[in-house]
Amino acid sequence: GQQVQQSPASLVLQEGENAELQCNFSTSLNSMQWFYQRPGGSLVSLFYNPSGTKHSGRLTSTTVIKERRSSLHISSSQTTDSGTYLCAPTNSAGNKLTFGIGTRVLVRP
Amino acid sequence: AQTIHQWPVAEIKAVGSPLSLGCTIKGKSSPNLYWYWQATGGTLQQLFYSITVGQVESVVQLNLSASRPKDDQFILSTEKLLLSHSGFYLCAWSPGQGAGAETLYFGSGTRLTVL
Image (cartoon, rainbow over all chains, first blue to last red; front, side, top):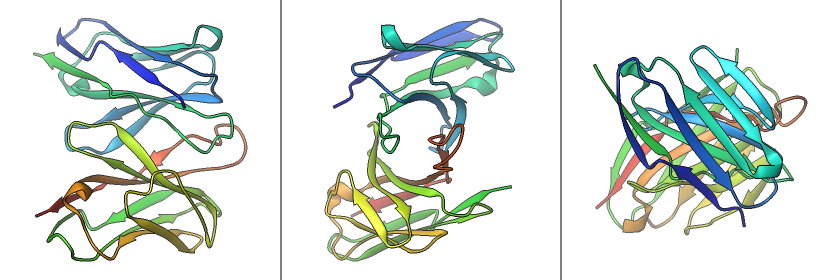
């Protein structure tokens, strides 16, 4: 089955700093999604990005299918960015997402 | 706009007792529906998915069952809870068709503690 590795496991930033989160997956996929998990547990969809680069505010997602990797770039981090970032490739049938363990981000003021 | 509502927000239950968690999606007809589970400190695991009323596929069972009695409703249940059922349960939906068909939108989750 699909294996997903996220790095780093955790990250501490000073407010204003940039960060790059990595996601590597083991088998071909249909799409890639990135989620933000709030400290209380609820999830927010950040990107649906099967390939290429997408931007949303201070966030940028880049997926390179043939290299089996995706990244999430946070620019000018803010304390409200603190939480866990999860990547989840979708299988070829489009009915199963496999989540990584996540990158825990803490942004200090 | 589509909304997803999960209930209850939290439950504390005894081992061996029954459980029923629910999820309702409004504003979208025929969504794909999913149940996910996350143990404390663990990864999110997909438990079930459904593409239509009355049809549910199991991905990881964990001695739980799921049903879709109506187009907009997804129920997760068990007759007898185990300690290992503790964790965070999330319901999600996806459009199932068109661009971004697999994009997942999650409910706010149910935190279950089994004692």
